[in-house]
Length: 446
Image: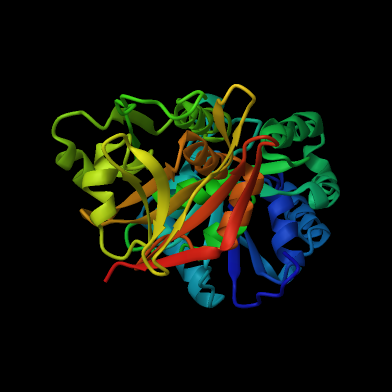
């Protein structure tokens, strides 16, 4: 995040002078050092004048430690311990924003999953004050209701944790209140599975009318959450899997459930990296009322045209797709990927052992991400291999951080008027996966 982006404005809101540093101090420092225009707003004020003056001085010193200009630290001076979100407090907040000519691109504030009255009131005050703005909410460990805090955006603050600690040390009046060890533990809770040393976690709130979400995507350092939350939000993802086709003569000798293993990987990834209910539900392609399911949900089609009748009857006939699975009858033989643009066919590579048993040493899968042609408000994803290995490698791309990072550098999310197909190659002997970048195809839905 070294690129200067002076047009991006972030506003961090805290009930008390140390709350911002506890919940999001590393992010404040990261954005400030990356060229953002960062503002801090402390909402309440102590009744005791001398204590209030001291705490404001500490807040300015902490801001300076995080790289924020002290002229960009605002104080609303609303009553401490008795804060309310009402018409008067909203008016006061909006008036100071107007005075400062401040129109932030993204707002950070308290999570509603908090037992402190002032923290909850600041959360409500932020929601009431701002319209059509993306809001990210952080947790303050002192009063956080952990079981109700469900983050879906994660910022790597490993490089900025020392500055966060320094900023917290400036709040000497709160020496007994600021528990550095608890804060450190909380910033490490989400880190192992995400691959970071220190992490700050946030809940994303997108109010009605929010048009700009690219900033949220750029901020999210977890490829898995960045990808999936951008695509499906808090909605469900329905996997429609295939069923093994009947063959009179089987032409190979390997396990036929690799696509199911891929489904298991995606389930596991959601369990590990998705905080909240696992959004996946899976169904057989043989279920009834399939059209209703296709028209009202985000759908992942698992398996090619041989095993998945929905892929065969629907997906293969959608306008704009370039790659599809083809085969010969009557025994579903010669399975291949048909390229409709070049009119070429792509086959896997096989190896026969001394007993004549055939196994693939390289398989290829089609990964598709597009608007659902049957419901423009929903998403259609395809994990379709020539064999199950190809489907499996598509699932791995959708499940693993490193592979998702490579994918999101090739495509734009959220998917709007354009969808994507890309071929994924799987070396079955070494379990290596390769995104074939030159095969990337843009699907124009119009």
